[in-house]
Amino acid sequence: MENPNIHDITAPGEFLPEPTYPWWVWAIAAASVAFIIILVILWLRKPDTAKERSTLLDDARARLAKIKEKAPNMQPHTIATETSLVIRRYLVNAFKDPAIFETTEEFTLRPQALAKLPPNSQQPIKDYLTKISELKYSPSLTTNASQLVDEAESLLANIEINFSPAEA
View 1: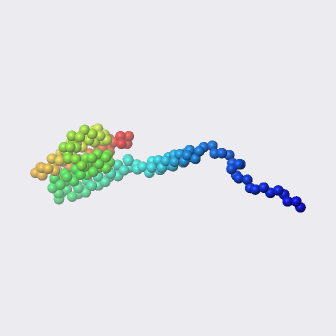
View 2: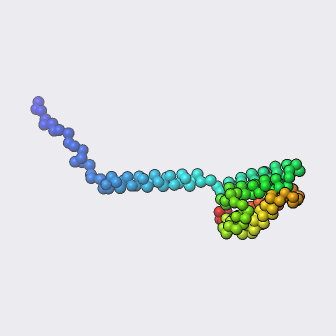
View 3: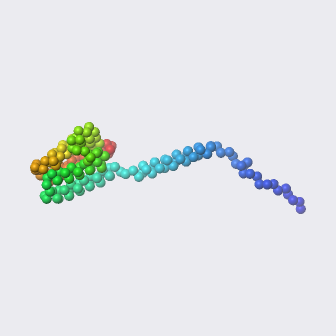
C-alpha cells in the first residue's frame, strides 16, 4: 500500500472573506442599538402625569377634609395656615411651581407664577392666597372656618376642570 501524501491543515483565513466593515463601525452600531433600547425603556417607565396629578389632587382633598373635621377646635389663623400649605403643596407637586417657598407677596409679584395653570384658575388662586395670608398674620380677624376649606376645595376643582393635559 502506498502512503497517500497528507498535507498540513490549511489556515481558515484563506477561505473566509475579508470583513466588509471595520470593527469600530460594528461597535458604533451596537452602542446605538443599546442607546435606543435604553431610551425606549425610559419612555415606557415615564410616569403618567395626569394620573400623578389626580393622585395629588385626591391627597389635597383628603387633607382639606381633615382640616374641615378639626376646624371647630382650631383658631382661624391656624386653619388659614394649614389650608395655605395644602394648596401650595399641591401647586409645587402637581405643577412644579415654587409657591411653597415664597411669601404671598413674592408669589403674587412673580410674573411666571402659576404659568402652567389654566388662565382662569390663576387669579382666583392668587386672590385666595392673599385672603388667607391676611387671616394668617392678623389673628384678630375672624371668618367661617369651613368656608375657607370649601373655597380651597372649589379652587382645586376649578383647576381640575379647566386643566387640559396638553398644557402640562
